[in-house]
Length: 455
Ligand code: BES
Ligand code: MN
Ligand code: MN
Image 1 (spheres, rainbow, N blue to C red):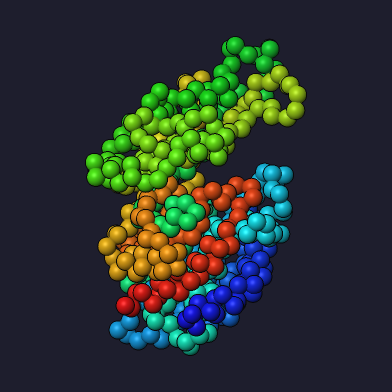
Image 2: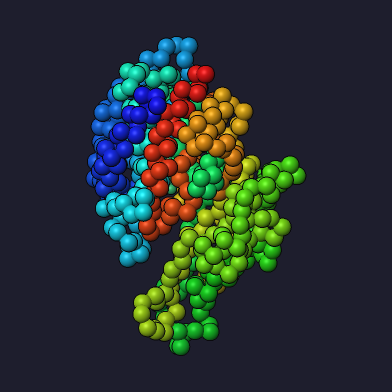
């Protein structure tokens, strides 16, 4: 066994304990009350970089949450430079009562570690840091130059990262960007991701009368904002699961017959999929299969909807306001700002004239396709094969990482999406977890990646 592999195997229990410390910090980026925890988490990451052996570690304040940077640039001018990117912020934990163990008290059950952020993305960030450590502790050096950038605003759209990237383009310059924030196709089916969807996240508020009213006294003459909101939402899609916003599909790159053939060959068990989710059948755009619908076609979803009386029992009331958070997943070559504008114009047009509507654009990100013939992807394929003992598949995924396209456009560096998560690991849901064998193999695969890159 190589020194590298032996080192990683011997340190598994230490890795687990350290990861638990990372997971105990409730770094929920969207919650203003967690600002202190976010700062504490950034400091934890900086300390983690230091103990790994990185240098020039800095915590950069931004208009939002801090960015943490570290580097190790001793492989020589001829050697390639890899920029690893990840995020230390996490999603909110509600509904809290559905968690088997508390979200910020990491617990191991069944070979999985349960905690908010376990797989998205703290576990995967930590895995990458440990792969660097394994090289540095066993060889005293890295095969390539490495820069590490860990941000705290990914889950709220990376709003301040674009300007950071532009401002520090020199410091961040790299030949390859490596990201571990995606999933494998399935357990024991390793894969690399080469496409992500984009996002436009909107909030719509419908306002009716100046106060909540008795629904018997006024109902019938005064428009009900909740009814109006429901009718607006109903008009956003048709019976074929297509989105009705004019111009919505204008820039959608259609799947080529070849791509569709490749999709058809991916293993997928529709009955098992439905059973695991406890749904009677799948839904969505007519004419596409489940894998296409969840990764290569755009969608529109209500994320939350509220207004009026939602307590227990019945209250007869005609609410003054109703709101919904509505997001659209985008595919190449749709543009998030363009789609947000089209959404707003259409919602205003279809809103009944008896109410007023406000539409705001909360955040967004553009879709991305990463090149599959880059040196980085080829090295990652070999590294995954060595660590998992199987040739990885190449897949596109439905989630979004807003900064990916900007790395390719601003830094001009191809991105490699080498994730070790599973889409069944409840990211953003209660009982988020990370399968430990994939966490450990991920450390090995990442360590191999740096070796393969210079082969
Ligand atoms: N890691 C996810 C994205 C992801 C998940 C990619 C699964 C591929 C497979 C990331 O942290 C995330 O959740 N992104 C948000 C984007 C955002 C702008 C809030 C998303 O996709 O909802
Ligand atoms: Mn993530
Ligand atoms: Mn996420």
